[in-house]
Image (cartoon, rainbow, N blue to C red; front, top):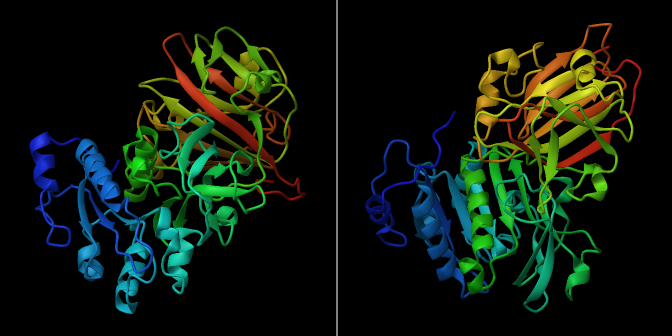
Length: 448
């Protein structure tokens, strides 16, 4: 797996953060991650920019990445940009780069660079189509600063995994000229009924991520106020976006539309689920299910499914075992799922055909791709398990890691139930946001 952002000694962190705004960076170790904060303005200038720069510097010091800050567009050269894991556009406004600098930044992104847009980054470079696509949407207007309710749509992402389903905070809430939902993965949206001045007809994304022409992009509409940068939840939100952009944290940032919840965190959504065998799952106030005891399985008894995409978020604390079962008949015997369906494994410590992303005992995941996509214990991961005909494909944090076709006549993926495993007394695995999108059933479907 790639080197992660490491916690440095306070002396080393302090040394890295000493320096000028636009001068040369401090010396860099061979594996050190660096982030460039760019805050040039050619229009309205936010008085919170100094607080934003200070916040990113503090996050870097605490989380093992070096930070340089500049308002000099001359920093946008191929050679200089190659030194950075991501560039943070911190409340930039107007036309801030010339054509040569734009070309250098485009090449940087296409070669795998990272972008983080904060607040007025959406009020920047209106005549540069590449930038508009990277940011995701352009600013249109805003009402007065006021409290609002933010609906957190993806709680498996590193930028939002720490949040409750609703986030109450005060900021200047942007309206955008277009909705990014079709081409970006929306992490959070505004409840327009909770404040005055929203103009996006009830579908109002406010934070999102995407892969864009080879690079990684994260945008948050928050960060207008000085107070934002001392707010613990917002700082963690910003940190998660930076970690995604530099490639230290993995996430599924493909657009997600058309899914319905099977478990949305509420007790009511568990009414269609049944426990098979010993053990159980406990539900916490933040909407997380955690396995207890076993060997058993919590399965969705509301209906079976034919062709579908199943998504869920999962987290282990250490060497913990669990899996997701698909394609099994209705039964309160957990061994029925083992003998008649297929398990997509979660535990990362077993042999290849029985480890994360494997179709357990039948087919290993692509281990190289799996290792690059996998977040470590203590962090959330997202599975997509897509079943079409007898074909079963697995995505981990947006990366396809397995493609399996059933050829066993005693098993069939065409119609069955889904469930999550509680494996043993010492295995504690957490799940969130189990959702499904049913797909058209076609004759001659893949895997036939």
